[in-house]
Length: 399
Image (cartoon, rainbow, N blue to C red; front, side, top):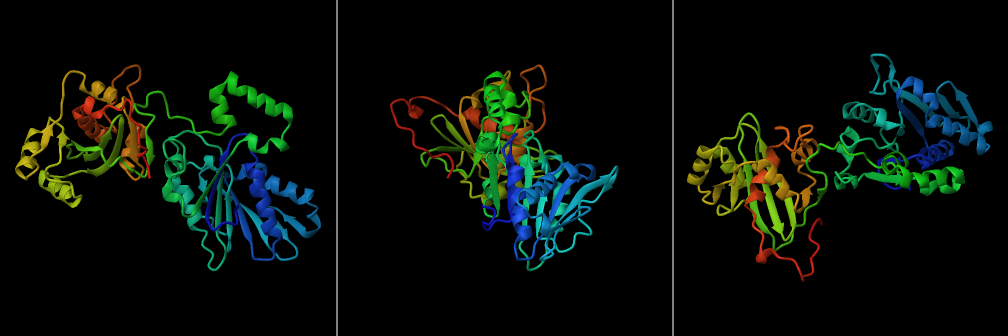
């Protein structure tokens, strides 16, 4: 599989899944192959390198009877016949000493980042991979990790909120998720039975640690069940727009397509310092019809009036009343929501829009697009026109 024409491979899963052993075997095969190979095993701290996948590689060399052809020299594994080699690299040599750029690594072809969940941020990861650019040589980067929580930089970079790979990386990224069930033939049957039992006795532990699924951010997250992907709304959808005004905070505009109990949402505008005239120009550039139904924050009547004078005649004040925020959130929960995966600010708000601890009131942060969405949803009407009973439901969700 690793011979496919992809540069990046994300290999992740739970305990006993064999993910490290498979990559180690690939590195040993490349080490013994005739073509030029210089592989680097990286881990965040120097002291953990000896307990890394490096140990698996050495064990495979012994078990495959390759020791006569191999020279081990400190942090290097060298093929005596063709001078191919595997070397180790630490992001962090010691306290306060960062080495993420990979200085001193000459002409590498393959990078293996082991236990990548230890890397504290996306910046450190990008510094390292940007240093791997040997001209004219094969270039592959393997990222091996155990999934952590959905607020980690790794999840936000590569995955959608439901834990599936983000399709924007499909062209040059391979995603491999394995569990102990894929590797059961190499495991102690008693341990397999123990892990099977954990599915019943401690399902949360089983899902996260044994199966290697991503852990939710927390109980306070307002919305947790939206799907993110390439939108493909039902062509018969009702289309409206929600608008939240801002100045220092961003002005937020969303497109809402609704059919039956399904809603598709797309972020259109998310920018600070927009006047009504600026916003009008942006909406024209987005080809929003001048007759479109737009529901806006009623606390900005002057901005609404000015936009109406600019030709947006169906721009109206959103419904508000006592407990309007909780009421709007409750109404949103009544629908199945599909969101555009390229709506990056909407995705960020989705992760961070949370209830104040011990209450049913959300914190007044990360809510500009969420408020715009709520204004639009509160205008939607359900009734005989939208009834679904007795009719087949077409599958227009994501393309």
